[in-house]
Image (cartoon, rainbow, N blue to C red; front, side, top):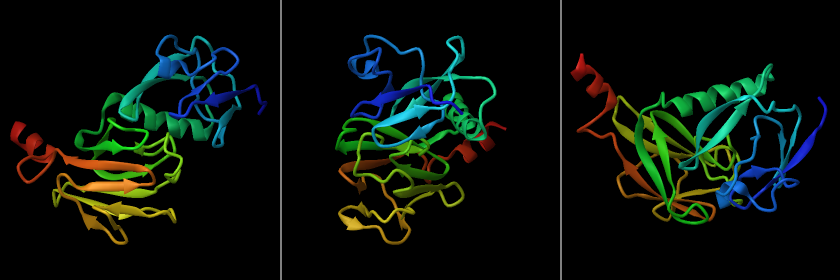
Length: 213
């Protein structure tokens, strides 16, 4: 594949074309770039696009850190891009009902909320994480921690991820799977998150679906 350009990344984790914009257009919200990253080779400061994204490509709105970003899809994607596209479509279409939230109360994501879905939710800095703390460089890129909702037991469980970095629950290190309760405080890197459950013994999506049958 042929390298075509490099994009800059702002402190909040947004990518943009530095040759067209003096500062991040996502943060300033004054203008919108005509391309958004969809695959490529990423490092901490920039991403190299390996294929052009057509100007007339179809945009897809996807969640990102409690907000939304627009992804422009191109034809003939690579296998890696196809996998990413499936993930973005699932999130954009809302195919996973929310079971709870994490709300940032300390750190660069202060005030943002992150949806929790049923099953395992991977927490990290990478864009493919279910809970993406993209702007906190002290958080591991992949699987700093894992938050799981068990629909059968109607319980939430926090466990360490595959990173060497520690995760803390109420100021104690999480070394084994530990059950979460409403209001618990989770710390990863320089970020603190408050756990807010939606599903509980009094409500679950499975029970709601059965009641509607």
